[in-house]
Length: 106
Image 1: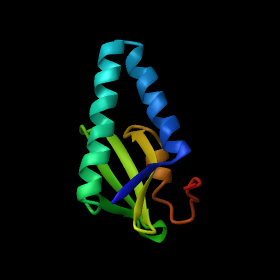
Image 2: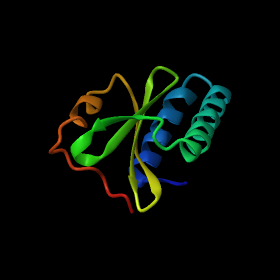
Image 3: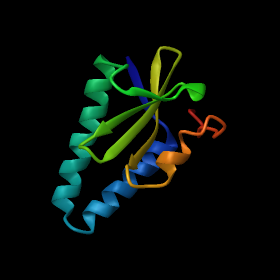
């Protein structure tokens, strides 16, 4: 299955990278590589690996490394990663609201 990162997800990845790079560029590079490999390898093979988090938006959540939440939707035989968030952020709770609009998939 094809997987696309939305602009929003790319921005989330960049923020995670910058946070880790404040401590170690090597760690930031390694973590980013492992995270993106996890997304593109596992979700491509097992698109229902995550749990349905917001049924009204058909939004799934997959937890990575016990701390990062990957949110995605399936549309037109593809997966669109819409958020990649530190699990401690308030936005994780806001996303559960059925009336919260998702960022653009295009």
